[in-house]
Length: 322
Ligand SMILES: Nc1nc2c(c(=O)[nH]1)N[C@H]1C(S)=C(S)[C@@H](COP(=O)(O)O)O[C@H]1N2
Ligand SMILES: [Mo]
Image (cartoon, rainbow, N blue to C red; front, side, top):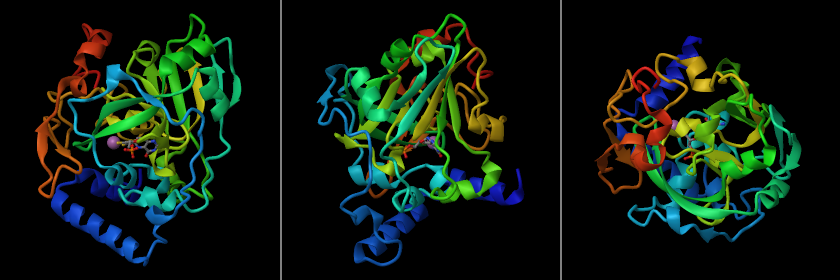
């Protein structure tokens, strides 16, 4: 890890001055609105997106999130972490909409499973029986949160389709590589592609979701078009974006952030207010779009999904397996 990389990462992760950041962000949007600067990606009528199959989708009443306050669309689609397109929150919306193509898109299913092969993403959506909408909490390891209405399908449907063999214990998700169009990938220190993984039983939990959309529309590029993972009880970095490969394996993959900084990021990454990040508390979170003063709220165990997922970690020391 060279110094340049460390410095950038430190900056984007520290978030010690949320107010300042908020102001600079608003300023950027303002500049875009006036039509100066970075081509005003937000204003382009045809931000490219793929995986149009199944829209419009229906809300699944079991995950309506009706007790939650949905984050405004503009925040969800312009305050992003997608290092392939830059390190600042405002980079992905601009840089992922300048020539990077997410349509058509092929996903490969590989490894310890009976039904492997390459699938067009829309064909895959048809195979799993279409899409639905779910409203989930989203908690980034950087101690900010959103509430996002996703469209997509339960990951367990894809797993059932693939029919993993008895040897398969883990599932690995690999994001795309395109260093020509993804400016962030021109910094090779990161070690692309972005990789994430789950234990197979975690992946089969009802909450694990493959998103193809947000707010009832196909995913914008900056949110990980056309297909990204969503595991709402885990920190956001588990949710690999723009997936090209799903692999069933016997061993746990070394996920990207664990490889880069294993003392700070582990494999499990379960949201846990009692296990602090070495550089900041995880006991509370800044609610994005939560008003001018950026309201904070307490962080919940497993991000509020204890009922659905606690049994997966029974008897495990969650301080050790962070
Ligand atoms: N390929 C890839 N996937 C990624 C990331 C990334 O940089 N690259 N960032 C992660 C992090 S830290 C978070 S919080 C979420 C952000 O998703 P969002 O921008 O749709 O809110 O994506 C995750 N998935
Ligand atoms: Mo994150």
